[in-house]
Amino acid sequence: MSYTFDKTFSITLLALSILFIFQATQISDSAYGSTVGPKIFPLGLGIILGLLSLQLFYESWKKAVRERVTGGPTTSSKISSTELKKFLIILGSALAYVFFLEKIGYTITTFLFLCISFQTMERTKLIYSIIIAAGFSLGVYYLFTSLLGGSLPSFPIF
Image 1: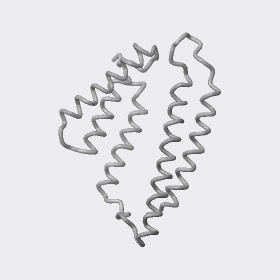
Image 2 (image 1 turned 180 degrees about the vertical axis):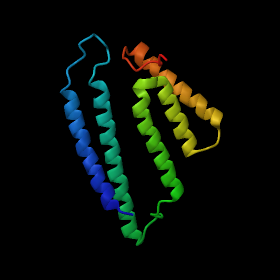
Image 3 (image 1 turned 30 degrees about the vertical axis):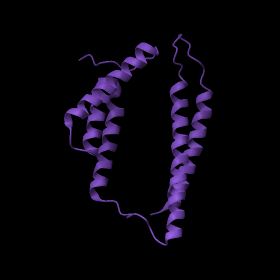
């Protein structure tokens, strides 16, 4: 496995997150009186991206050191066709999520995306996947729109 790529990619993501955070702080505060300003979401995403890139760097560094000490790779570096298929399904559903978000609304799009993702990762317990996806999409919609005063694409008007 190429830990050099992982380390380089994590540094690139860290630089991108710093740029993202810097640009998010340049956004002006909300002009229409909302308690959730326009810079909250990009700032949060930048912070999360920075933390995840630091974790990726640490994990790849730790595995590279472990390989040097033991004298060989600790896990198989081949990607199975099943893993690739799962990745492509989730990538396609994420792209569809972005495309359909404005067209059919946040709640329905998020529900469908989560159901597809849960079932792609593990095909058992369909009822639990549906309940969790519905609870999450409706719960986040309610929290964001009602409690925080933000706005999300609502249900579609056909």
